[in-house]
Amino acid sequence: MSNKYKKQLLFAWEELNMELSYLHVIINLVRGLNKALEHDLENAAKHYGLTAAEHHILCIVFVEKEATMTQIAEKGLWDVSTVMQVIKRLKEKELVTSSKRPNDRRVTYVKLTEKGLKLQKQSFFHEYRLFNYIDEKLENGSEVEQKEAEIVLKVFRELNEHFHGQDFVNWIFNSQKKIELDNKE
Picture 1 (tube, rainbow, N blue to C red):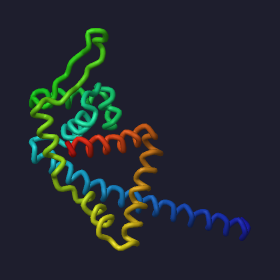
Picture 2 (cartoon, rainbow, N blue to C red; picture 1 turned 30 degrees about the vertical axis):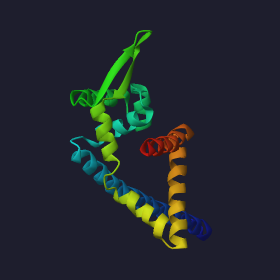
Picture 3 (tube, helix red, strand yellow; picture 1 turned 90 degrees about the vertical axis):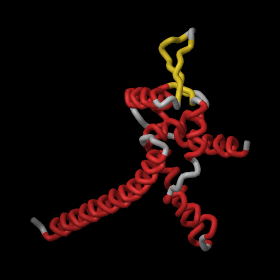
Picture 4 (cartoon, rainbow, N blue to C red; picture 1 turned 180 degrees about the horizontal axis):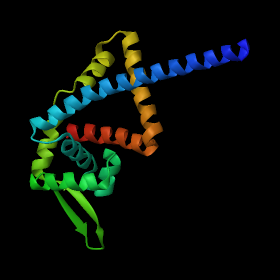
């Protein structure tokens, strides 16, 4: 093997090792954030006697006012079978109702009950550390910290566009507007 080839091979190996170590860094940084967010979501849900999935479905239905099982699955990034199981539990807790339309009995529509609506509105005021951290940087941080927080939010948006599509991201931002309007009433 020539020295030139050995150098090229060594360079390629070093690049691969850097890529693998960078992958390790990305995986663990994202996992760490996910754990913090999961912890807060689970605590918020538990506070109201719910699982994180039940709580998230209530939020989706709150925003949509009425949603099909398929719509809930798409917005929640679940399989429809998972949504059906969670909806069953929410119905038992009297937080949602489901119905079918006479003209199409295949589609099930889900709505919040008064009890579900009240619980969902209360849950918006729970403590979420990731949100608080970013909000603190945006509201009270230095100019550099504010810019960094804006960049983080931009990256979150771009990653979701890449992995889940523009429709998903549009739904997120449109639902934010619906929540803001509803809280003003």
